[in-house]
Image 1 (tube, each protein chain N blue to C red):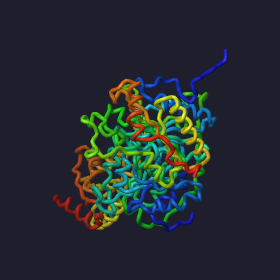
Image 2 (tube, rainbow over the protein chains, first blue to last red; image 1 turned 45 degrees about the vertical axis):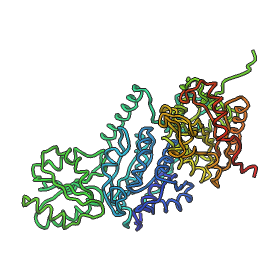
Image 3 (cartoon, one colour; image 1 turned 60 degrees about the vertical axis):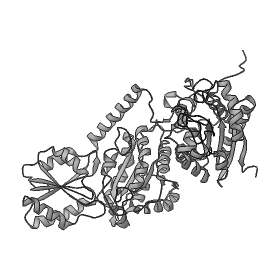
Image 4 (tube, each protein chain N blue to C red; image 1 turned 180 degrees about the vertical axis):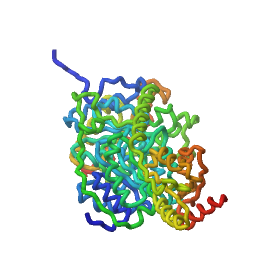
Length: 359
Length: 248
């Protein structure tokens, strides 16, 4: 298939449509506004619906509404807007409404700035909204990987009845890359496959099959049963959905851990370090929830490894999961900038060199 | 034996949790009867709010959602946009839900002319949390968060949602009714029926505001509460049609 040069945000939108998304609800915010703009033109062409909501709060609740009917639905935003969505995300998680949420991360906290960032790792992976829940969270490092993950995202969201979050830094949405777009998926709501969805129950039908999209379980026992069900599902996701890339890890002297576009810069640093005779590997989580603890531990705890360097476009968030994976077995150093100052290849090389010198 | 009266099949057999004298039971029944009489063959989705009617999904015998506080119009928007014009979509919301935390969602559902119907139950107080001041609480009315009575100087005048939403250009039908006596109950049912009919005809946003009592949090007997509604609420919240694009 021919490669097309596409801007990240437009490729993300097109991939969602090809994956079966027919409902988009969103609100403009930089640096992802090209996603709603693209959707507004493209959705009518495929018989779908683009709706500009009055706020991110409303947008995620529209997602909850459309998702509960069994439709494939998506919303996108950037950090401050995703903060506003957290209430609705928690409701989607509680009511087990499958959907896709895209966060093109920008600098924070607060209004921060509009440059690329990875500052919402904690928000995406450690909670964000209230209650004991997780989102299946992808952190793609290229536009093509974003497309490929999007193509499978709805199947996974529907299999587990879990909302899917894409944590992408602003670089992914703003850069252009040659991509291969897959064929359009032919998706139609099948009430047999989604017996929980609101698809037209009527009095006289089996009362157990009445569609109730709900996250309130007022007595302690029923809430416990519901949370047990959620936790069993999360365990299933942890057991089956971890994704990561290991690069040049075998017998490495140092291991870099990084996600998203930062991992690509790390690869350039690894190539430079190789020329200096220093063997450095990279472990890149592709799912940041579930976090690939075993894979990170395996790479980082090899006897050859002297130390681990975690690099992020924030002040050290995934760092905590890396440390949990390694559990004190190796020294873990950190290099990063707060949102919007991309770590450079030279900075990463110099950091590893200073670690080698024991600084 | 001839059957003279049957409970509507659009209500489940679940026992209401509402307090004695609360009007939610009447309003639930009116909504359910109207839907039943429309013969929609399962093409009905309701959205319950946060507040006293939070468990309405257990009472209305159709596909139901439970929404976050105030967000029911946004949820209903997502539903209606995905299921299309043949399915009746309604929200059932109280005054804390709709007139306070959910003002953005209700105003913009009206502003977009969403083809949904909102049943807005206004009893001038927060019921579920135990009697706090609502935006609709009357001047001088006591509540647990205005123990000396609501003052205009401190909290402003009570908000009038029907008047406000009638001013939104895309709203289609807005009427305020009450359920304090049988004549008004009959009028309320007619209003609900009209709003639902307009939705199924593909017309724009409709809201029926229903003045209702809260004997428990007003500190009155059910009968006194009906009287209080008539003497205090109706003068400030006059009954009637505030917007009817069909008649224009």
